[in-house]
Image 1 (cartoon, rainbow, N blue to C red):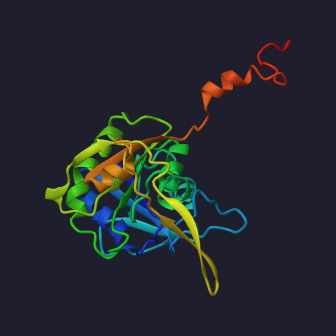
Image 2 (cartoon, one colour; image 1 turned 90 degrees about the horizontal axis):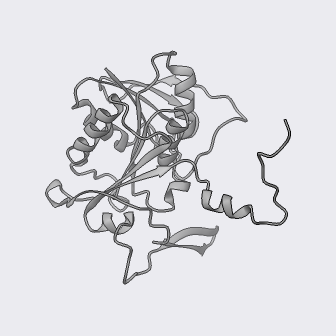
Length: 266
């Protein structure tokens, strides 16, 4: 039996995590656990709680056959707390799914996203992690037929987790168009679109609100996740958690103030 752990950043009462659980329950040989924030924690990035105590609490979950808790923290807290506090040694989760998020997490969103942090924290702990987001920001109560759309992808990730074939130190960022199944053009590998929007601050009576503008680009890079989702594809991006630029490590050896390591006397 594959032990599957779910989290999100929209909170345990969000419709997206219920849709994710329902899609997974249609698969065979899976045991599902849910550990999600007690309240919405969108946009918290990879924040951890360490100045106050965490208090996991059992929680009912729509009458579905899953075991669920809430944690009064962020998505990364939910995964770290679940791993250390709620699962016995030898019975840790086999895979973590985070989502389904209201709205996409594309390009540099992965650094701000609580959804992505749940999957990233799983990978830090040595567990495969998958973040799922749905392009329904302007229609947030409508998840369409997302369970049907993502079920083959969920099956693929679960099968690869069983066979220990998912790459270590990588979480998978999945973005799904808000379309009926027959209009989805396919599942494709995608690169992060790092410049698909611009941050703007709009002044209101109470202060400045952060907003976004999406400039038209006449020649977008065809493999970027934003443009693939807008063209009707499910975009899947492998995101490595080691952000070291190793090419620059070598070039730094040319800096006159840098001493090369490895030559010290023992």
